[in-house]
Image 1: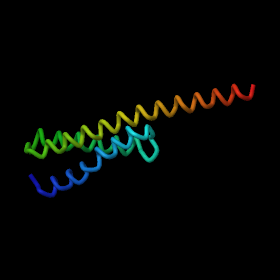
Image 2: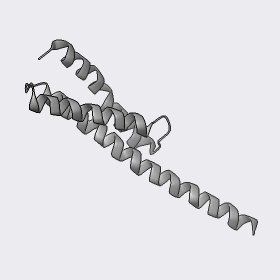
Image 3: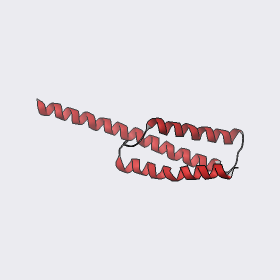
Image 4: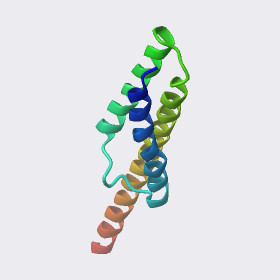
Amino acid sequence: MSPFELMMLVCFGVSWPFAAYRSWKTGSTKGKSLVFLLAIWIGYVAGILHKVFYRMDFVIAVYVFNFLMVSLDLALYVRNRRREKRLEAEAAAESIGMRA
């Protein structure tokens, strides 16, 4: 186990619960990037697989926590994006109805 690897994961991991909470509370995808979230998610999968196949130690727990938090934020992104599209469609339908 490298203390630098642990420190990096802890520093990254501190922000994910706040990001997921913000996604939940705002119900918005504003300021979010699906590509970025997926890249981070894939990175954590790779880190977990490395730990499983090459160097198992307790740091895997931090990888798993971060992976779960990013997964939650991804799920909230999908939920919020669907909601935004539905609201946009309803607003468009209302504006068309108002013109008729």
